[in-house]
Length: 310
Length: 147
Image: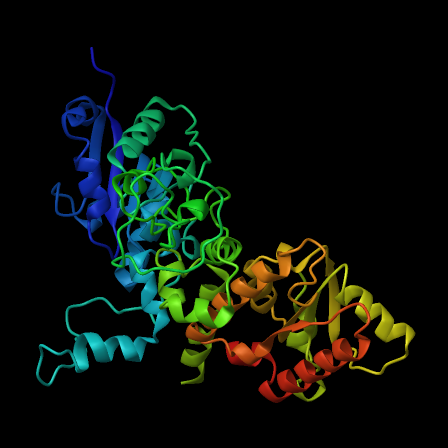
């Protein structure tokens, strides 16, 4: 006899659908999980509309997943409705937790973004910003936590299928979700000798020793400052960590600052040399969590002030 | 945390607020010497003692700026003179990365200053505070960029 299915809702803001792809990638385990779910809303997957979601009684959905960040008015509305209808709301993926890759739009102001995307797009002639039949876009990427409170954060770009399975199983069984707090280095099998770095290398330079720590060889690896829920997938396969799981718990710390701190400790070399070797530090260290970082907060305040002045 | 002082006061009465992180072994003693030697320097710097500049995470500086500090000064032992051999070299590398990062993010890097001042260099410490204060005064309140 199967237990009564648990009502769940999946919602997507501005994102790539990769996190839900990762959910679908739990593969054969789906056969175990799906019968336990009563899917109440999932854009483009099950045939419910936004008005259906709006029509459910408050807190009638047990678990809600919100993927992506909220860049348009529609995303913000969806996020708020989800908060209203769900008992447990999960920030699903790094975009939802920290702003993620789309959060890097805050490196430029909205007009610059429009220029690149619409007005002077290299593949478009006489482009203009669309205004008909599309939701309004916000002036600046604000982290989802500014619009709604979350109960669970599942970072990752995307969260691994294993992590999703662990989380979903725990939540459906009503057990507390306890995630290990270790960083990526904890799971990395490479040998560390604690030698300082003499030179920072670009990823394509030279040939890395497969046994040794990539950071100690001079490749920028964000493993030491990144939450290791991925269990070191990339580093064990030979790629440096780019920090997609964000900072380790307490997860709202400044990931980029922690990485700069870590890299400075590993590479106490001449500042001019260091600056010449590390290209684009902002894009490297704040790739996944700019909006929730201190620097990102300063930028958000700045952009909002710009808007008010206009 | 209280943020009332700067917001409620009009810009005419604005005084730069500077957070100064000083290492225990050189610059904090240098600041002390500046006081006992009665060297005059602006009272705008709030000094925070850290055991070594190697203790300073870039987050400390970014938090200060986000909370509305108009400038941040870090003062430590000269390279090679660190009480813990290499703490200041680590900070120096972090500083270079951080300075470029904040510049990319649109924060004026002239709001932050790194200087080396030993325990006997009271004048250098005082001059550093003075120079940063004057610089920040020209740049204006950081909060004015958010209003």
